[in-house]
Length: 171
Image (cartoon, rainbow, N blue to C red):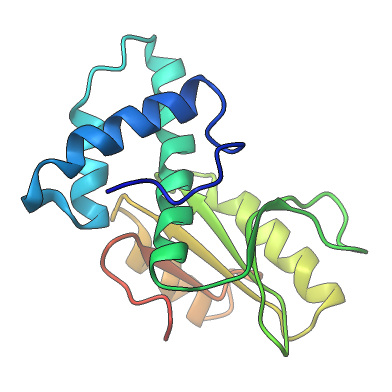
């Protein structure tokens, strides 16, 4: 797969690592799904410390999400976007929708970091009542539990948590 992302986004060390990984993985025709790309990237030795590796994996996961949005023609979208009157929130992805803002947050694993997305989603909904906030994760752990809490109203701000590579985002 040739990256469709603008060169400006890939003009750093992680972007270059991403491009190299995409080029290597693309040669393997069995790895053409998002989930397979992520698995292959996790198996790759990036030659950095564990903390730096986690940061790179998070950024690469976000870049793969951008590729997926482009692939599915979900455009336009804005990366690392802020919205007027929505304080203390920087959304991983803001997608255009004619009736409401739709934001996606990417978290490789949920752990406690889903709370940041809930805060940002709640801030969004205070200004844009019909706005939508989705959290995309790779790790399946806790997704059902958190989605049940969203349905029960115990988590406010997130409309749904989706697992990368398993859900159609156009629904």
